[in-house]
Each structure stands twice: as C-alpha cells, then as structure tokens.
Image (cartoon, rainbow, N blue to C red):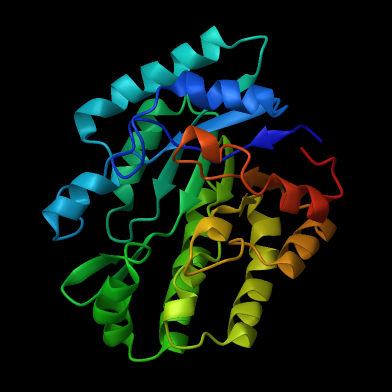
Length: 275
C-alpha cells in the first residue's frame, strides 16, 4: 500500500497558515510519503453564510481558484520523481446550491485527481451554520435549532448520505471527509449517543460500497482539545477494510509541522509500518 497523505491544505486556506508549499512537501518526503494530495477548500457561493467575516475565512475567493490550481500543478511538476503530488480539492456538500459545486467540477475536472467531499454545514438559527467553527456557536445556533443532540446527529448523517450519493458521480478519486466531524466538540456538548452514531455509520457502509466512494481516515481530531480522537472510529475503519472500501489517511494539515500527524494510529489500524 502506498504511503499517502490524502487531505492537506495550503497558503490559500484563510483559516490556516501562509507557509509555502515546499515546506509541506519537504516534510512529507522526510517522513517517507510517496503520494501527497493537496486538497484546498474551493470558493463558496456568495451569501452561503450570513457572517461575512467568517465567510471570508472559510474559503478562497472565486478569483483565486485558477491561481490555486496553477500553484498545485506547478508543485506537481517541480516535485516529479520525488513525490507524487495529486491535484485535489476539499469540496463542500452545499444543499440547495449543488450546481455551484458542479460548475467547479465541470471547469476543472481535467486537472482534478482527488476530491475530498465534506459536510461542514447544517441548517441552523439564522440560516446555514458552520458546524465545526466553535463549540459555543454550535450550542447557540445548531443545538438550539434542533433541540437535542440526537436530532443534530441524524441531520448530520442525512447530509453525509446525500453527499455520498452526489460524490458517486465524480470521475476522479473521491472520498468523504472526516465522516465523524460531528464529534469535534463532543467534550463540550451534551452527551452524544454513540449507539446512534454506530447505527448511522452501519447504514452508510453499503452506500459507500455501492457508490465506490472512499473514506478520508482523518486524524485531525486527535489534535482538537474538544475531541481527542480521530474522526473515523476504529470499528468503522475495520468494517471498511473488510468491504474493500478505499481508506486513505488524511492529516488535514493546515501547517507544515502537521503533515504526517496521527500516521502511527492509522498504520496500526491498517497493519502498516510506522514512521
């Protein structure tokens, strides 16, 4: 199995870091990675969320997407023979505006090798809310909207199921990003029913098989104080392996020093050599 970091970010991420890409790639080579997917957040539709300041931080403006694609293709060329740089995006599931994402894919599909397709947004008080922004915002604008954590969990996984169906049409490699992102703030929220999460994830397994959509085995939750665990449960990863669902490690690095973060856990689950 190729050693691959399949979920990473760049200086085009406005809630990340402005480090040059070479620092990320050199770190990946130092750690023995053979493939490295650059998967930045693409632009979002105007007015997608009401908080303009937050909207500006979530994704690059539309006019920067061609610059980003050129930047990644240049890195791919420059590092040829050293590491396989895959041109990618972390697309968002945007219910009600799926055509916006479709236009991005249509324009760039000849260049895109990888798509991480993620659910970051849920309907909430005042409109669409970013569910992984802050714990207090989650409580005030999402939990208060749905009333119970069970209702939030079910809404989230309804979105994930719809995202899998949409992603199935993509011609390039595709996987669902951080499938248990709903647990990012679980240590500061009312208890989440783990049995409910397990039931919803069990329901998702056959959808992944049918759609040929993989899983982003995202370890970023380990470094989030309110989470403390990966965004993919061990039992779920084991089931994915049994069913031959593609499972790609993702550091979700927003800084060069985060490249390779959590690989040891992933390697243990997949019975691979450690760093």
